[in-house]
Image 1: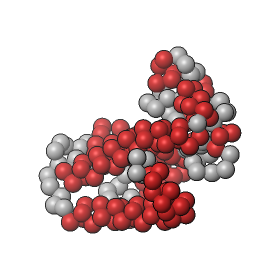
Image 2: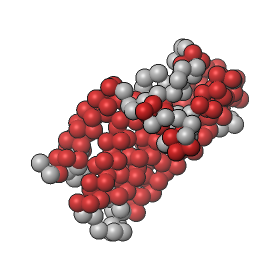
Image 3: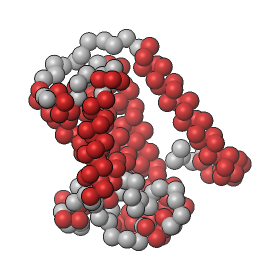
Image 4: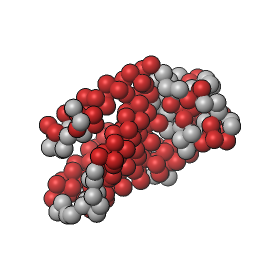
Length: 212
């Protein structure tokens, strides 16, 4: 909901009312997507999937898990007290990679699933998730600049939207982009558990469990 209608809705409904609306819309759209996905014909895969694509997908999912777990610590974008202060700190870990690690984790999740399940319904669903994540990240930049002012603009000037763009341009050191222990350890645990339970959720064997 990082769009022009957000501010008028907050004014009309109040912060608490808007948050309730946000939750209702989120669960409604998510539920609708799940229902539509289950009702759609599976279709034929658009390309063959072998161990090579499964290996690439597995590595992408590990990277997505690390970005996701890292995004929960010292993230100025999260709606929590002290966000302005967090925005003044040096960009390190996943935030030295991108200032939107959570959004990019969703996009990487989508890419990983399309690679190994190239069916039309999966591609439409995953493309929609990636689109919402990456366009939403751009919208979040505008929203946070309005809410946090110079603090967010300063944070934006020291970080990048695109992953590793800061390193490639020479503005951010490669050493700063080393994820912290919580991101690496937590991401590894989430990756292992999520891929282990993948068959229990109706999916194929995933991650390293395919080869064990």
